Image (cartoon, rainbow over all chains, first blue to last red):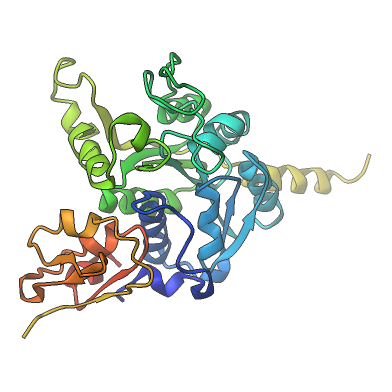
Length: 274
Length: 71
């Protein structure tokens, strides 16, 4: 059946509060279609967010939703999943919320391989809190806290998630919106911790300070700088200079946390109290 | 007769122009108020990219097979 994001919206919350041309809405649209693709009813899905532009996603979508504290969406999600393992838990976070404020929670959630699907919307900036640079802001970019350009290198959050133990990792962009939908669909079906990074445009908080004024310009930048990991295999380091990879990076199986925990409880109960 | 129906919710549209700039067939343009508008429905191929890339969910394309296949 055909799906439109409009069918999943809380209509009284529309139009939403994001700036004109913001990529967060594009990423959220792909997530909603992916949930629809997998065939979950809206009652078996909970979407948990933290703080920031990414966190406003769950104000407008009509699933079970829960907005938590800054960076702590994955911690609340871990507690929720352990209590209600039959629910499909989706976390939507951002580069500031998920990689900065909540970076520590992210690595430990990856390590546990708990069955949570995380979409990290990377707009290269702390948008809602005032345009500060984040751990994913590219080196040399301008931000309110880096008026002469940031000197810090940025994380590759997909490599970080892989290193920390995530069992499904992928990346797409707002421009590559159908790839994003495909990756999130696979991430939802995956048992274990999955992370999909969505590179999006922030024309107001980031673009205006970094010589990319229009959302169209920023989407074209994504088109021109993204290389699919399959195509990259046949390219030289010179050809890949200044580019970033998109596609599926990790897809492996490992014991899942809530199942291990349930088994631990059953084993302990069968032995009886000491 | 056009194969597809494109609905634009003008009160949700924030005039970013993404739908217009990335439509491969030039179906969309701005109206006099600066909102997205359907200018050439006959050329629409139902690729859905305007709906999928609209950050404001202001566009709905009905009758597209690519949307059926994806879901």
